[in-house]
Image (cartoon, rainbow over all chains, first blue to last red; front, side, top):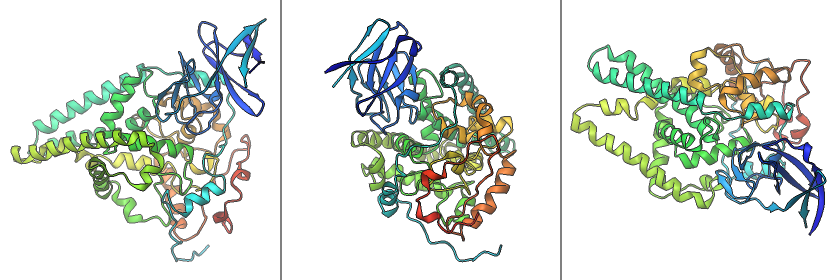
Length: 103
Length: 368
């Protein structure tokens, strides 16, 4: 596991999401209303749509294609048509830089 | 141009046959689709959820249903009941589709349970298994009018014109919907249904089909007990005598346009309408916009349209104008393989992304 730089803290508004690609994978980086950062796989587990175009509401991300929802803090599938949980990734902030720990 | 009057060969629209395999081989299944450009901040504003507009509309909707239903019952036996049932029928048999649709997307209300309540009420009215249709509609958005993938294609070539005309009172459609509910209630799910409904959801589909059939059975028992068809005038029959507006607006969503493309500007139609129709239809007249950005709630679609209209084909100016362009195209599609109405884009628009689907063989030989 390796910590890598994903973005600056200012790159993501509160209650929003950003796409981050690294090593042939795509991730979604989230910032909640408290200013904490989270990361999940970047593609919806239902139809492989990029979640970065979706809507963040509270602790949930809504897929832009079919409106399925996940809790982005736990990865749990919350609303059909998504049934399979998202993989989450550890995050940390260091010197205003958001890092995620990836394989 | 004189047409060959021979009907085109019937296409395979099943979800388990050669068309499905072909769509997957050609990369048309779960493909990347064209989107107009919208800044992220603006899109977040458009996607924002609110309970207020749908609460207002739902109170009006259910209030009018009760009022007109009461009027129909009160004046039953005289001609005075006709206008009441006319309005009740549209509120039941047409509003049900738009409410079902918006609630299925979860965009009607911000509060989840409100979406679920309206979704189940509307699913019953429109005679749709709420589980099956939630999943079929997800597929409709993944693979819009991709033959062999989309379970909601209304115009299957060659189009049966008689079937489209009867749809306005819908006896065959409603009967087939009832048969599906009855089959599901007996625990029988078709091969097509199993292609888009996860196995974990199938028991829910059976449960809800049984709920719907139980209500119809109760209505069936109430009618002879009351020695009147009045129970059916309130439950079930409005799906027939009030569905004309649902079909009038629904048929123009994709009729006469392209199959097997991955640019919604080629297979969906936006059409301006009067405010009453837009209220009944919950703004689904902005259909290109809805397909491009399905997470935008119905009440924000006019704003979305204003933002991207310069990147879209010109909208039809009225329902009448939509039929005027659609009907000749549908009739031509009955005889001319691969034909579709290809609207000119304004000079401000980015070109159609035909490169994304240029390898589809059925389009070879197409006449513009």
